[in-house]
Amino acid sequence: MDYVRIMRDLREDADYTQDYVAHILGTSQTMYARYERGANEMPIRHLISLCRLYNVSADYLLGLSSKK
Image (cartoon, rainbow, N blue to C red):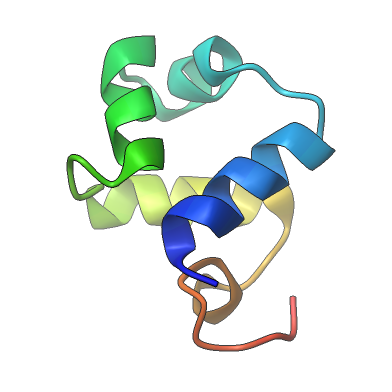
C-alpha cells in the first residue's frame, strides 16, 4: 500500500475532513488534497504532524512497516 492511500485511510478512519487536517498542518485544503492524491510531495514537517495526529510511526505512514 502506498503512502497516499495510507494517509487517506487514516484520515477517513478518524472521520476527519481534508479541511480539518489541512488546518492542523497549517495549509490549505487544496494543497492537502494534492498531498493525498500524490500530486505534490509533502514537507517533512507535515509528515511529522500527521504521525502525531494519528499516533503512528513515520515508517507506517510511508508504507515501510505494517506496525503502527
